Image (cartoon, rainbow over all chains, first blue to last red; front, side, top):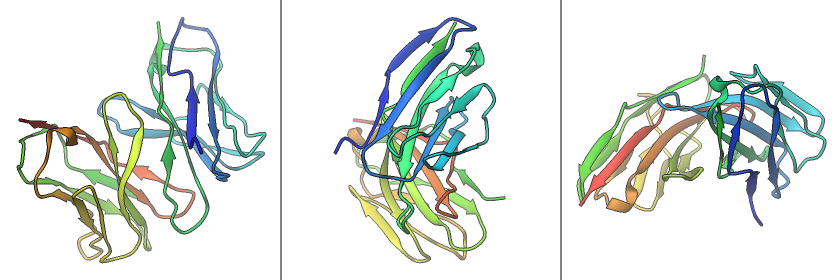
Length: 113
Length: 111
């Protein structure tokens, strides 16, 4: 049971490039989400999904796309990277039961030059 | 709206000192409350949680009690160690599909 996995761990992009951050979970969780973590701002929700085929925007969705074709995978796409997207990105998942504990991946550190 | 306010950092303590990190919340109903810890270079890990009023969450010597009357969930540890140096996040979940984090409090414990 690997929990929540993310790839890559580190990435450097040039302004305007596109890329996809991968996230997978093996806990059969319905809810998955993407956060970005910036100094002094805590974690901010980018997008989330409550199940396969269903996604919605969080607090800071601009510049990012997501899709959820399977329960296990929830990739985050940067369409045209900007320096303001330099951040650490965390994927998380949780079940829909009453305990609702959220489990986090190890993070992807992205630098946009 | 629902939100979490936690104590500003950074906090620096000597080993074996007492730790308190304050966390207060605003929410309707009966949210679940969490403390997460983030060690350098790693993701967030659940430290403890409480799902109803007066519940006490505890783990690794840390404790926090869900106080509905004061809308608080303060994190405490009686004797910190160097290995407790990390960033601590208070979090609130008012409904299963909603989760709000505080801004984090950095703790450094010096020998």
